[in-house]
Image: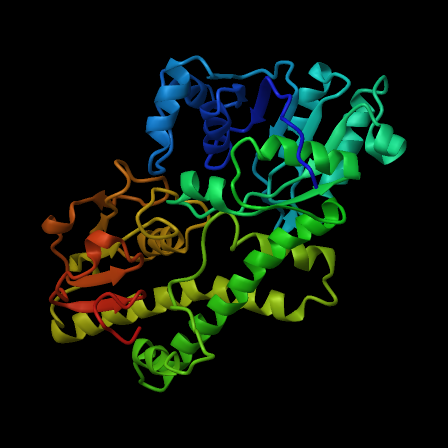
Length: 425
């Protein structure tokens, strides 16, 4: 496909979180006026000062530059633009992991009053199959004076597409540029318009899917694939513990096979994608998604298994000191983030485990998390301490931050869910 010169003079990004803000900054760095919209006034004020409210390498430098140059500003209310990118959360509702499209609907209805013929609306939020069509329906309901692709096809006033983000936290600013983008327009005209937009900075391929549903499913499939493979490693760790084997040694040996590449086990699976997206597939085809559901259940069960290991470690310590009680046992937790070297706590199994320990353990709780300056709620009387000041009888390694690697095995009982200290857990 021949990509036309982009005609975009103003772009609006709805949602200035871990994906929306880097995306807005990237467009602004190409000398396009970008209006970022978020309901979080603190985030808006922070960005307008040229600062960032999230941790992502290189993002602060780009935001500072584009705000100073006048290409990026933030507000709480949508304004007219040529293109709108929606990057808002898609959480669950209820206990059955049912997708909640409330934020997408709210964003759709918020931008509807400022839409004009010729505009492009892209849903970037990772979404269940059918979400883009639902967004188009909400827009059409709010603006009956405009035509949309579900009724007008190629001749619609408004172009609508889905283009899921596919970036790795910690490398977002690099991968936004170099990663291929999957674009699913509701028509070919919608796809072509979206390609023209992303090609303002994307050096990877813009691959056009046959429609938004396939693009939605592609992102869910990518993360479900990873979830299934992590579940295999996590289940191996539980089996090896039962058989008194070192799972890290086992995986290292098995991976010497030229066609085997087993991932590393951990305390569970976290983040805003891998821990969430597979449930969207399960929700869309509950009678068929057997393996994907089972993988989710295996990974969701891992934090509870780690908690039992912590309880056993406390018990093992007390067995050596029968005159002491659990209130006199200090537990140290290493890491709260959902992956190494970031501050992102969303869907973090480490945070889940820490909260369970805080509710379960009567004694002091020390937490080492070098990427945050304050502890989140739900951790009781726990205190945040530097690595070098940890003093405890039970040590629980949950996240393999760089600063933890190479540290000696601490004295006392050890529960190592990341293999930092070479334990069997």
